[in-house]
Length: 77
Image 1 (cartoon, rainbow, N blue to C red):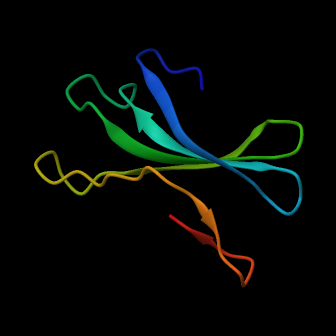
Image 2 (cartoon, rainbow, N blue to C red):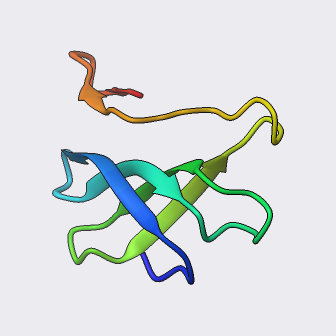
């Protein structure tokens, strides 16, 4: 998504408004921290609408790798 280091997408989900949710890993968030989980929301034109990075601390990393559509319209991560 344009970071200076490696970035990987593990799962993609098409949203009800034809946007995309991406979940993956980035090494671009600070030189000393590698492999941070990130969740990115794109609109139908594939513009980044929002993003969220998940890290508890350097010793206890949050690992997000899959997206599933829930029957109530939500998303399971």
